[in-house]
Length: 520
Image: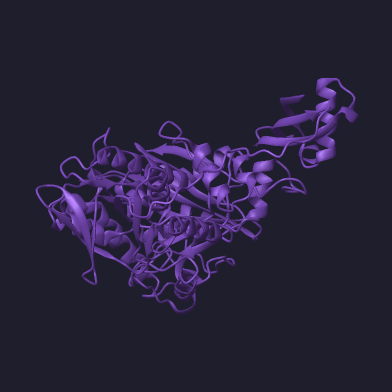
């Protein structure tokens, strides 16, 4: 007999298989010797009360051996050599999952990526911190895996109505991610593990007859009678087929290209702010209600904050427990920061984006004549200011959190995980007031709910601007095709329809399915 049940235990018990079996026997009121094994199906942490509890869904094998079974059935990818082909531009999560779904549907994907493969990309990423050199085609944003390849690999999403999260996690597990991602309520892979998973996904595409071309930047769409039938690259190569455009939220040259070609775009809201870095032990103390921190049985604590200040949201974004802050510029002359964590989440620090919601109408008057690209222009200007404030370098400007709120200079900055280095800077003065003022009020509100959060042991580092796309490429809600151009399927974060690895992957699959339907 196999019995599935829910139990709620303290962290010590939840971390030990023998203790779980004992708890299951007690709940079922059976002899413990009848239980041949248990398997955890779901796991979540409840940190709302002083006593932290772990909620488990457990499958118990009673009077029978433990079965070797998949939590999610693997997909059998078939050969697609010689079939109809489609172009996928961008090898981030949207593009990779679109390509894999096309293979399932019997269509050959031709995947074009402007950057390098995930292994070679590491060299260029390292140079950013070590030498201050940014390769415009190979950096934290561009290259195989997209902006998520060297992120925390966070897999939590609220986009469950648009597709199967379980399916996406299953495909990642099939390509090398640990089974934990199928179990944990807030799953993550880790910046050190995700590249291997991405490489395996690419190998599946190639093994099935698909093509993957790196260092291949698309510079033009071939449009005839309002229908896209291929692309042209920077070297003049042409690839024929309908196009899934999954270029990510930082591919500003793509927005420029589309705008120049007269393809309809829309300006959309974004969120802009800073990276906030605390000692991880302090966050553990606050979130787990204990001076001892997380102790032996709990993971590095996360947090999520959101409030409204003067009609706009102020919130934490991309929280990286036990992580590091990284330089995320995608071109010279920019200073942008982002965060990531290794799989063990075991560094001294935690960090999170702390951002303010901005609508197109919030921008200063000078942007009013810049059309659909005005939010992008604002991003560019703010990144340029951050770079100039840092002495035209990637040694980021930083300010102690409490000094930032109180409008005081920080003479000494605590050690930071940011590899390019930090230096004192008056972010309270050079951030636009409609951002800085809201952040200060937001920080006070967050400290009200978690006393001790607002502290000079934490620092703010600027700027965080790449939270989402500043442009939306409009598409039909049913066909997911551009509203005016046939054969063009705007996809993922870069098109303005996703906000993370899983939601982008779901959107990639949906675009592939719609493209396949149009192929019929």
